[in-house]
Length: 332
Image (tube, rainbow, N blue to C red; front, side, top):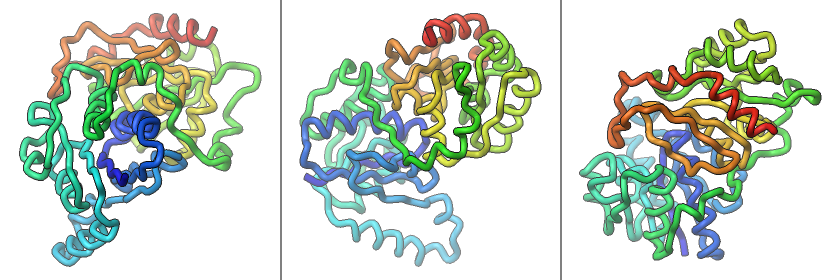
């Protein structure tokens, strides 16, 4: 059976959607799995043994090409060249992902109208599957993927998941020198995709001082790098990591004793690697299945499941003492 999974962005959502791979592979050991992802995030899929083929799409660059029509035609022919699939599962739920699923050819499955992001995406599906919106995102993706294949799914299948992110032996070289042999190594993730999900650098710095371990801070863009530098400025036991590729990031997370951060891709990497983690949630719903080693701290906010309230910065009010207490428990 040839299966195509379409989840283009973002980093965190691709990781959460990847959790379904282990369930599919157990039930369909001989299937051939292809994943379609945005080129910016596709490297997170590298070294994944359950995926036989990755199709990288560069829609952001494509839409700025002039003239556009020849570029679109060439991309259409490239997608068609991958051949027809038995089952295509759109885990993204937007018109752009549904169109890609339609081009690939085969029976197309997607979320029902009350769950998908864009209602018109359903015009491109052969079948839609209702999935409860009030369950963690990782369970929604797994429910759609498994039910499209006639399989059963329970949240217990992912509590905890088998580690499913991998990297090459050379990917850890750039950060090896930052890790301590004498103290525990804790990775802070100071940035997320939206400001309202960010934990303040001042609180991160106080947390670093409370823990007294070797603290490493990762970053994915200039603003996050500036935040990382601010944390290091306020705490003597903090080191800012260099800019990392996604495979290098996976290696750094895999080497850490604990990862702490907001609702963001790198903290989801820890969950996917089986590395102890603390994820801080405010305006956004808990998207993973917490485990004994992957804990969450939530605020009292009433979360809007469809559209988070961007004025809700309650995550910034989580006391660093509460985070430190949980961190010590996980490190013990």
